[in-house]
Length: 386
Image (cartoon, rainbow, N blue to C red):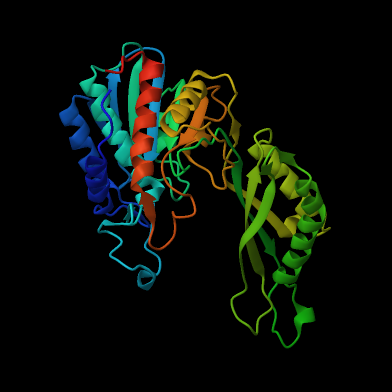
């Protein structure tokens, strides 16, 4: 079995860092073309699919039948942020102290580099002896959008029995993830001159009462709602209202992020939120609710073939047992949460390094990630490691 070459992986990651794919705007066409050309040369059946301008998704296949192993990661990144906070060009890879620095190095271009290396090695080994290997390099992840892996699932291009999502897990495992629900609540009122507030009806004052009711009703309830290390949470991330300081406001809106335990449903969480808001006693005609988006959480079982393969591979490559991490954010696996499949998040990188200036990735960790992925893929698809 070929061992991953550090110089080769660093060169691959360096090239990826040099291709901008930031959100906004989330345009990943150049990145998708780069990946598709490389995989096509390796012998994969390659398609580039998308429905949203700029969001190209690359799907590459070897083999056929069951099991279908899908290995995926996202190619878009967050923006640079404050450019002055970077000590080097974010789009030029810099190697120092055993690390590679650059935008997306950890989240998640390191996973792309490891997966591209894996794809080429599996082709050299002759491909799957059983089942089908599918790589999906997708966009639209950083905005939690529907046009990346969710779109590929929707049109039936990927139907995994085991789904591996690449991302910064420090080469450990995330097999459970909270769902997410975004909702908007709008309070209405009536304008008047600020010199006589009693002549109007302040939507901001109404919203203050609604927020207080939500915190009073849902706060203690969610604080007691846990699943292992996972906690049900609610955060009011935005508030907007009014149009001038000297006018009584006739509208006020809040936007809410609600993280769901795997046993919770998006619909149930939205209904619960609406009921908590209405417990403020405001007229129902003056408070409006909108479910913006939502996907449920998932929790993999302990006996799956994918999980067992990862545990054995991590122990073989690191001389230590696999660790299970608690996910702070959400990934593309959530779109398959109710499909009855194994969903495993795995990849090189420190989650805290992603979305930060001077993003970095350990080269040793990148090499180990590629080796672990090779062991797992060979085990699941019956490929002899030579």
